[in-house]
Amino acid sequence: MAVRIFGISMIVTVVSLVVAFLYGGVEALILCAILGILEVSLSFDNAVINATVLRRMSAFWQQIFLTVGILIAVFGMRLVFPLAIVWITAGLNPQQALDRALNPPADGAAYFPDGQPSYETALTDAHPQIAAFGGMFLMMLFLNFVFESREITWLSWLERPLARAGKLDQLAVVVASIALLLAAEFGPDDHAHTVLLAGVLGMITYIAVNGLGTLFEVEDGDSDPDTGPSGGPTELAKATGKAGFFLFLYLEVLDASFSFDGVIGAFAITSDPILIALGLGFIGAIFVRSITIFLVRKGTLSEYMYLEHGAHWAIGALAAILLVSISIHVNEIVTGLVGVLLIGAAFVSSISRRRRERDLQPVSVG
Image (tube, rainbow, N blue to C red; front, side, top):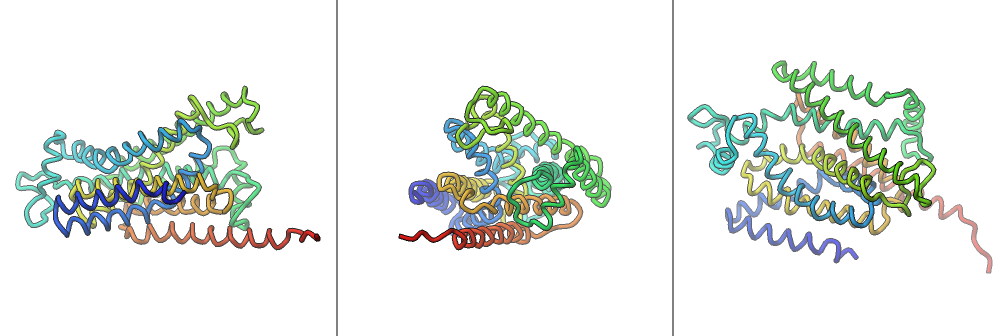
């Protein structure tokens, strides 16, 4: 199974590295490989969360996410999105933005002789708005998870009190709003307004897409005998139709929010949009999709039940880092390590729980 799932990713990786070599020689090949590793290390928590949503979708919508979704992830977020930021902030048309991206100023200068910012500078200047939108979307996702009462808890000493506090209506919105106000207050003065606007848009996007998905899950589930008591789809009743469509939209926005730190972080390695698309998109994003498929097909989330908890805590950490990065630079290595450590700890805890449950099982006497 592993060979079948990861086979396409391996082929795409080899092809991407060959294209990078033909494009810019050995240096481009090395940079492309580094970007691919960066994306996978930063996005493992993304794969876990994707898997928790993907397993609720019908086979048709799973296939849409793995085909149309990968095109959006590769070309939309890793190539078009950075260029679009430059189009908007620098007042250039798409052709001019692409030309400036492929032909940076001499000696690595931040501005061209005509006073226009370089591709890297324009995208970096837009970081506060990007971080505010992505940070608030992920913050809402994290808070709605920890404020929800659930039978199985990982960090019980913390998750259970938070679940009790979550009985207060709209607590997630209140906490997220306070976090946004603090980020705007302590961020750069000239970006306070745009940070607030982008952050509110991130919250609205989460509430709208998540709410619509839940609404149509309930409507579809009302007439489905396999639906769980809450109205949402169980493992037998996969989300189809409108529910599947809104889950697909939810996954795409979620994937985009996870991509922000990787796209911005890539500029610490190279500002070449071709290499960023090859490394982050064709290698990194496709590998993350393969990991997602592997987790769904192997039933790993059911087998290691704390992985979902660890991934959500990693999301909370990433959301906080994005908001902090509006005013303070946070190294991308720190971002990646926090997620890996939290998911690793959840994985180890899951193994320990499985061993305890196995030891408690009665021994059958022949």
